Image (cartoon, rainbow, N blue to C red; front, side, top):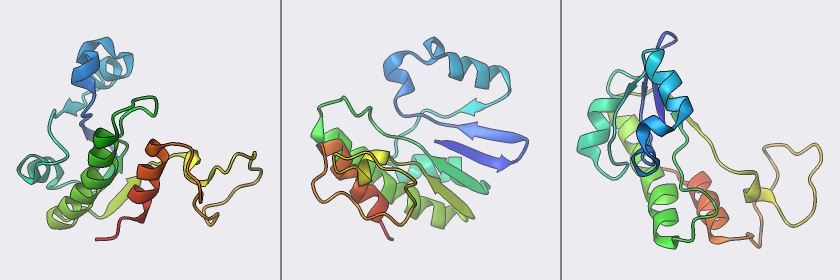
Length: 142
């Protein structure tokens, strides 16, 4: 998740970088050298999220375990509960815009999609649990 304070300054946070080694990630090194400030915090802790979000105008919520992970509890906690927490905290902190990234799998029914649009219905038979939680994530309304 990257928190944009204005067009020149980004505060960044990624819940999974510590697991892969912060400085092993080329993108993290590039962003750090460009002046990005990283916060390692939990999507599940308001007391962590709020100070990082206060004063931010736009949030890009990109946090998700990789789809090949087989940990159902982690998918549910990050993709659904974590997203609910981010949305609630954005509201409390006065964030103006939230951009949520998802997955094309939420509409995939085993057939190639051509000229797909945002109004396509969700998959009725999601291909895996990751996709189920991404559908839940998109349906979050708080």
